[in-house]
Every structure is written in structure tokens, then in C-alpha cells.
Length: 236
Image 1: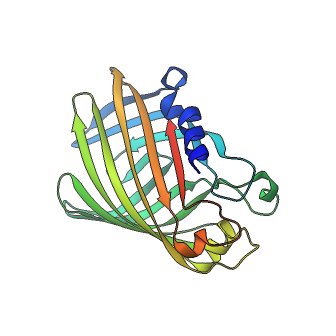
Image 2: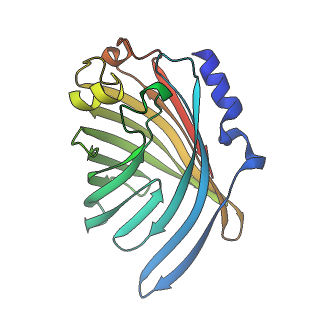
């Protein structure tokens, strides 16, 4: 596992700043609603927790950013808020879920895909949010995320620290971690990480994310999983 983490740190674009592709962002104001947008491309690296000869997987991912009155895009996720106030918001959400699967299983199980569901957020304070997401893949394999996120801001940069509990249905866990070879059952794992952006020049920003998933005992104990943890990160 130490070899996997070291390989990630050496190859992850989060640590290869000279090769970063940078996102550009612009702003426009209409009536009393401030809208911001941005487009870019990022390089992503992640360790593979499966029992396989490979240690890491690398992807190129599109990054889309937009913040309107009800619609938002945030890198590889987005949604529409049907209701929002200073303390609460609710709507539908969609997010790209990267399936860092061994190549030997790619013909059996579909890889990375867009999951869709609902999201409710409690804006506890100007810096702290609590959110609950219930999501599903294309075949109604459900999972949910209970997340707390603390917003940070400085001179020319902003970001967030987050911690999350992910509850996985038996069908979801059996497919994406048992690889349809073993019935693991439902389980809950935990995630922590940080994401942010830094202004480089006017409307030119560098954006990045680094996250860690800690698997539950049942998932780690399965015959297909080789590690207690999985690291992932991107820079764009």
C-alpha cells in the first residue's frame, strides 16, 4: 500500500504543476443575480484498491463551473436547486463517479459514469454546510453521502475541507467492490479531503482536489480488495 501511495504522489497532477492545464473563468451580472462560469480540463490520478498488478489509474476529465440562481456546475458535478434559502436548499444533483477498475473487469462492468439523485443542504453558517445526497447509477444501484464541508478563503484563493460518510447498498457494493464475483453486502465507508482553486492571473485559475476513502471492514475483507484505503486527486 505504501508503494501505491508513493506512486500516486509521484504521478498525480496535483504534484506536477508545470504540466497543469488551467481553467479560465469569467463573470457577468444580470439584475440582482451574479453568475460565474468556467471551463477547463484536468488530469486525475487514483490508487486502485483491488487485488491487481496495477497500482494507479490516470484519467483526463472535463471541468465545468457555473453558478446561477438555481443551476450550478462544480467541476465533475452539478445540479438544480428547486428550493433555496439562507439556511436550506434542496434539488436534484448529478456527479461523475470514477470507477478505478482493473482492466480485466472493464468488459464486465461499465466504468466511470454519471450518477443522478437528490441533494439537501443545511447551510449551518457562512462557512459550514451539512448535506445529504441519495444517488443511483444507471441500473438503480443506490448509495448516499452525508457530508460536512468547511469553506476557506484567502487572498486570491478559496477552498473547502470535507468529511463524508457513504452508505452503500448491497447491489452497489457487490458490483463496484465485489466486482460481481462476491456478495459483500451493504456497508458504510468514510471519506475526507480538500478541494480549492487559486487565481493565477485575472480570470485564470488553477483548481485541484485531493481525497482519501477509508473502506469498511466487510469491503476490505472481501477477496477482491487489497487495501484499507484509496487516494485520488486531480489538478486542472
